[in-house]
Length: 520
Image: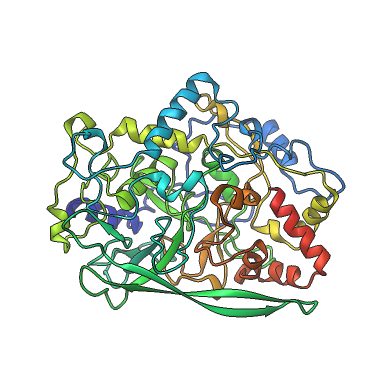
């Protein structure tokens, strides 16, 4: 992005001067942000008092684990689709999308699957790749709309994993006017993430390496589970040394299902679960991330990304176009993508900006189509929700305190212009908030208000279909966990109590809890 645009984004992303003139708001836990976060992206109909009371009753936590709850088999409400027994399980449109919606979905899918090429090209609508990039198309990272995978060896060019990079906000002398905003700034030579590919004539930024150390963990009954503790490195640096204060954060691409439903949860309902000062004394202190919206020119609730760093699906899609593929768009207009001013050969490389695309490499219509596609990837139906072992595992999951962060259900806003996602009872098993997950999972890289130990609670719907869709079953933000059990045992910080409860369970109970997760 041009220096003036980058400076504008840096100032706003650091939340400088945001607090002026914003209304004080409360929450069920008194989360005390000091200002109101509004749903500018939703054309939502306000709820009546009677409706709010009804919603509170429906979304209350259950204590009956003898049978499934009403509509529990349909985690995406009316958008839910039949669970397919093949790798297309995450690639279906919302069940209630209608004929016109399905047509738009398919066109968006075409753009999502498009392979971009280097400019100039005879295929004008498909050129503009790079100059630096991690993948040539959205689907290359979000394989079959599921989770990415980690490299399986030095010759495995896994395009579905990359490293974020930044330096502390203090190092960059950024303005920080919100007391607990920790923030980060781009690395001077490498920008916001490490791109491991480049167009012809340019060096790639670096090659990522991963080394694992075995970490044995003994459970309460004497069972030993071996975790793998990753260490990340960079080789073949193409643009000089990293800043001495550079912070690296590994990221595996998450699954895509249910994003439109998560986007449709009213901010007030998410904030009602926040408890920044742990006022109720349960050890859980969920916090919202606050991010600057390039669409709405204001601070909004962060919802997407592993640290809730973007507010909407369109913003997330635009950022991925720019950072992952090097494609300019109305929200991120620089054709050089994530290239820094120090990467002069990247800044001056041929680009694919075209008048027929609104002066960008993907125009507003194309960006909207990809956002529509992403918004309408359906959640598959539950499998075996009434199985006795699943119900037993559900009771253990709730009893261990896992639902303190993995909030089972919400009801989305009423939206006359988003009928598929409007007023749906959904079961994502996330509170969409940041939680301290302990030193074991720390990346030591802040993002907005998220500290180096905080992550957004990951949605659990569809997690049991990971291997079917993605061809592997690795979990967590960097794919270090090879089983759901390993993922649980990596939990620390606010989740330490729930993790220890699981570790102390008899083997049969642990198996039942995992079986419940596999049914989601």
